[in-house]
Image (tube, rainbow, N blue to C red; front, side, top):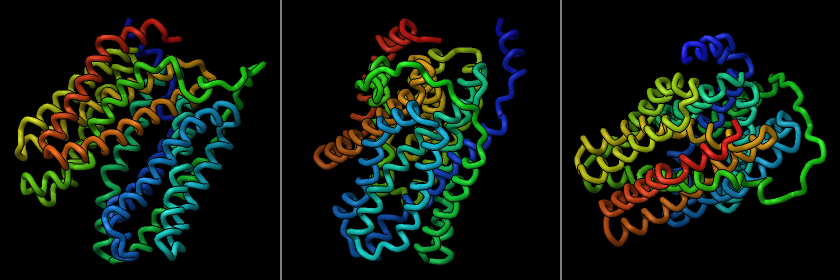
Length: 400
């Protein structure tokens, strides 16, 4: 049976022209974003004399608006021509980089940065939804996994490239220009897409909560919030923990590089399994592997635990995330793909935000070790929920 499915799938191209375009455009969204991320705190301090609390306030606005816009993005993508929504949001995302070049005050920079989160949230939802549209049905689950590689590669190399460029020229404006030009190139690539018009549903239902949030995926959302909370703790406090507790001063880049390697390897290996329809199995394996990685990080306070956990968590998340995205999509009708995508991303954003806040509180009052044990415990709750309920809930309610 597996060989018949594999032969049938092989007849349909995975890397078709439109899929390659949206893959590259997504890479450029995240590359341009990650190009600025590691140096913005330094920029705000050097240019405007902002203190740590002010820097945190200014940069958090981006996340807040991205979180708020995503449910509406899903609705817009499902209700209007997706190409139009994609190009509009991508254009606004790109033009905001030019805004950083003309921001002459901390207040104006904060306004532009906060507004930037909205087109970022909308463009990521619309681009990923278009990617799903252009995939052959038999290659969809596999394609979702490979699509995530564009995020992972951009996240892995973006900060390193930024540090190299800044070290060579010591100019923040050069980075802003590069980010603008890269995002503009991504916009141009998406503008060349040729999409078939979608069938319009007759008699659209009235506006309801389910048009903005995939209510059927509530248990998967809770699981994702738990996994993202754990990731939020580690990704935010990894650098200062390594420096203060382990004496690792320049290892943050290597940590995220190993995390990205794990993500890439697991997506390459897991693609065949997803193509065979082993969605639940991939999700189950990924959550269990990640749980082991968080346990290693919390229990082993040395460089082996620090770097080993990065690779293991990457391997686990690389299996888990595309499987969960496929689960969300399989719980939604074809005209709710945007809503399914936005619900997944909103769940992740909420979890990361909770992780940052809770991790900071634990680290302040109980120490970093307590914060990382908390991250493992929350991850364990998510794994228990998946094995105990969410897995069976998906199998009962999936539409395909």
